[in-house]
Length: 149
Ligand SMILES: CC(C)(COP(=O)(O)OP(=O)(O)OC[C@H]1O[C@@H](n2cnc3c(N)ncnc32)[C@H](O)[C@@H]1OP(=O)(O)O)[C@@H](O)C(=O)NCCC(=O)NCCS
Image (cartoon, rainbow, N blue to C red):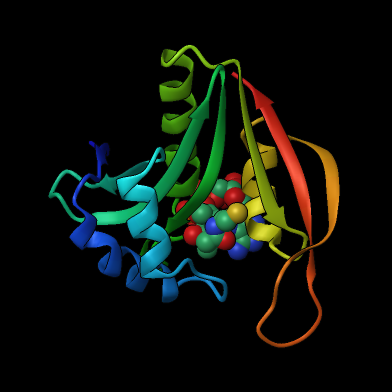
């Protein structure tokens, strides 16, 4: 049984950032996670039955909309259906919180995430040119996506 656990302890921010750094070239910093945990976002750990954390997600509710701020599955657990399951759980949770839409932005080059979102009913609704900064190289476009809940 896989479960979502709300993260409310700011001291876990470093561990979340480290976990993400091992599975994406553009991770959030520990400071960003700390700000999320202590602010308006809901930060979730996604745990297996044995309480092993296999991924995390960050959402922000604004009125009847949910913004998916971030989501990742740790490398050893990827491509086993956990990302889709986690996203489905978040969409169910958002519907229970009386939200009608989930919105997100994703790097144009992030084909794995874009495929995941499309497979969960998201549609591409727009493009923000050169939205993401890059440490090296040019800025990258963001694809805007949304799903009805
Ligand atoms: C995106 C991510 C969360 C997907 O998690 P996952 O558990 O590996 O995904 P799943 O196994 O549930 O796959 C669901 C669907 O996503 C798509 N997908 C996942 N990984 C993919 C890949 N490497 N290449 C292409 N499509 C991929 C497929 O459509 C897949 O469906 P299928 O297995 O029936 O073909 C994971 O790759 C990840 O953590 N990436 C790094 C962080 C990140 O980019 N987050 C998104 C920020 S916007």
